[in-house]
Length: 453
Image 1 (cartoon, helix red, strand yellow):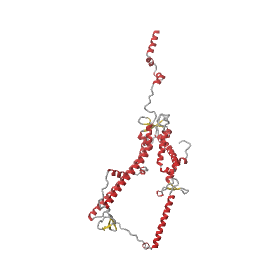
Image 2 (tube, rainbow, N blue to C red):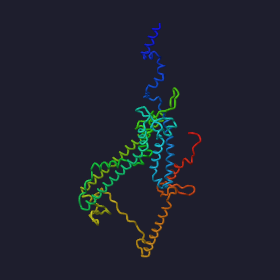
Image 3 (cartoon, one colour):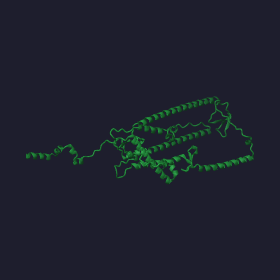
Image 4 (cartoon, rainbow, N blue to C red):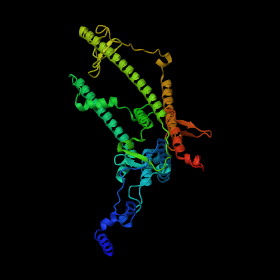
């Protein structure tokens, strides 16, 4: 009996794996040695649900509020250091610095703390949302987050500056080509030569096309511009079930996950109805724009065909009777004068050259006799009145420069644009300056509510 016991114990000592295999699996996994030796394997999928559309919208609204507040403080610092004129002349740069500073300061991680991925913005903290890389299903890295923020802030600013510079270059190049052609035609006319052929290079055609097709930046940014339509289309896609509220977020591929636990069977509110209504509105606007474009195209074609017909008729009349060339001659009181030489030479009567030419007779006003027959005293009095009028005009111009000065920005107002505003106290301001001042002082005029919003 003892021998059997010793044999059994010896076999157990010789084969420890057998003894460990005889232990229950739960007790093996919870043993300290197993926990110490086992390697941690992170999960490849997050168990957090995606953030709902109201949470994303609320986060962006909160970020916009704090970004505008930070930008207004930066604007106050610039005004106190450099003055109001510098502040109003660099509004776009101040807005760029404020937006970039807010996002960089709110998302930068403190050295020695965290994993170096960056923090959340104030809006993301408000709704407990964390940015997620949709490809790897993990929290966004610092480089991707930085690319997203730079594209979100610097993208519109860079595209605006690039578009304005390209349009200015196209307009300047077209003006250079037109000036060169006009000088060449004038030189050929002075030398009695044939006019040179117009420049038809690829660069000239490209410049002409861009000048004719590229609208002004103010037109693109207006409420009926293409940028407004693109922004509304992107917002419609978000309302119809998307997760990208900004274009930069869609380009980089960054979404949001929510860390708030949801109840079983919870269905977040959806904005699909707003997306459908916005899609209907965009469709109606697009149809109206296409209709107006088609109508304007038909009108331009009809006008060009009429001009071509009139030019052909004029050419036929000129070939029949040695017609009048408007580039080298001019008709004054049924008489044809050639302006290719100095002074102009009279050629012949216009009635025998062209019947289809439109000839406008000169109108000689019937002047009073006292004007036609003035003596030396009246002429001297008239010259004195002209000199006095010039002095009054110069004085009025000097007074106008001081009167047309805005009290806020100390710059000259433009009354012909209809932007001048008179307050009850009698001071005259520029309406744009009042809007800018109210935008800066809105925080002091309307203090924050003691209750959280």
